[in-house]
Amino acid sequence: MKISVLVVDDELLIRKSLSKVLRARGYAVEAASTGAEGLERAGTVRPQVMILDMRLPDTDGLSVLRQVRQIDPLLQVIVITAFGDVQSAVEAMKLGACDFLRKPYEMEDIVLAVESAGRNFRQASELDLYRRQAWRHYSDEEIIGRSVPMREVRGLIDKVVRSQATSVLITGESGTGKELVARAIHYRSDRAKAPLMEVNCSSFHEGLLENELFGHERGAFTDASETKKGLVELCDGGTLFLDEVAEMSLGTQAKLLRFIDHRNFKRVGGAQDISVDIRIVAATNKDVEAEVRAGRFRSDLYFRLKVVSILLPPLRDRSDDILLLARHFVREFARKFQKGFDDLSPEAQRLFQIYSWPGNVRELRNVIERVVLLEEGERLEAEHLPAELHGRGGPLAAAANDSLSLPTLAQIEAEHIGEVLRLTAGNKSRAARILGISRQGLIEKLRRLRVEEGVGRQVS
Ligand SMILES: Nc1ncnc2c1ncn2[C@@H]1O[C@H](COP(=O)(O)OP(=O)(O)OP(=O)(O)O)[C@@H](O)[C@H]1O
Ligand SMILES: [Mg+2]
Image (cartoon, rainbow, N blue to C red; front, top):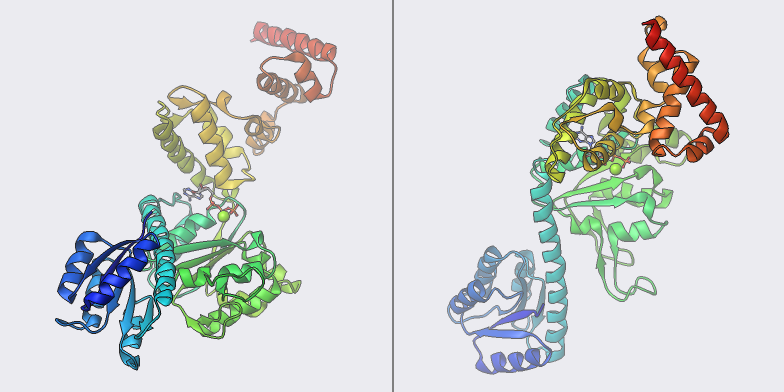
């Protein structure tokens, strides 16, 4: 994308020379000689960068700055102030100017300032686009569940979104919906229009995470050829989601603690304190108290993070929600893949409820996505479901409260053989290998099963 620059200056000579130099560097340049004309051009041309002289014939630069920032909050404004006029430079930066230069300036300084403003614009617009897409996508995301613990979770979210800065710690096994809850907290709060930044603490080595969070100054280390803003700075006004927070090194924990206490930080290699207003939401599937006891997690940080703590119980402990979620996902994927599925058969429902769901809601969702994609029909049937849902635990668990209906070994064997044959599409050699018997042995068993089946039929 070609960056376009609008020069607002009443001196013809300056307009001409700036236009010439910037065009030679590949920028599209427009010029205006008064504040009113500048505002008009900014509205029609929609430049990405504006060079604005603070002293204009018709109005003062600050009021132009204030108005253009309203027309386009992403516009990067470089202000030019008279020699010695520190006050208006400070005012301009407060109003959101990205840079300022004092007269007289070198052409090379202007070019550098425009380059950096162009980079700022790109970064800001990427963020803005991401935010708008995310907003559309997530603002109506539903948290399904009528079980008592899920009602409590929803109640806590409702409270938390009303207090803008409270830190929240979300715990629960993998796939229980921690990230979903984090997004709900952000998108349902007044911070929704500001960014939600996510960082997975386990994917960075010591030092790198600190750099990712707090950014660095140019020259802070060998590779730091440019100043880089960290996530904490980029999500000012919004929410920082620290996923897998228990994996954070002790060194970074100390930095984070300092940030939480002071609400400001220094970029790596920087001297200046930068203040931001963010909410921290952290998540982990580890037992943080055990991590604290083992000396791997600072207890003071733990207490700062869990001002409100939300525990997502495993899916097997909220069986009331399983069918609710299952139906929700069946309909979601039926819509997505344009299939006719609308519900689950009673037998499929039974299998869903007795299965232990080690991968929690994520596993449930994946199972349904796969079935709806691969199978056809109106109802999801038991035979559509993968082996583990028919698993050995299945019939046992189903009958656990009723010892009279416990299956016999032969029944379990028959069921298991049937399942393996289904998975291998009837290939007896492969099935036999999986079952750990010879092909001949399998054929033998099958013959016997058929005989028993036949006998059973005769008897009944
Ligand atoms: N209550 C719920 N209602 C609807 N969808 C849910 C619910 N809980 C979880 N999900 C869905 O299940 C999937 C897994 O959830 P999520 O990614 O939030 O889990 P997580 O706890 O962050 O897991 P991990 O610890 O592995 O990162 C997502 O697709 C999420 O949308
Ligand atoms: Mg997650």
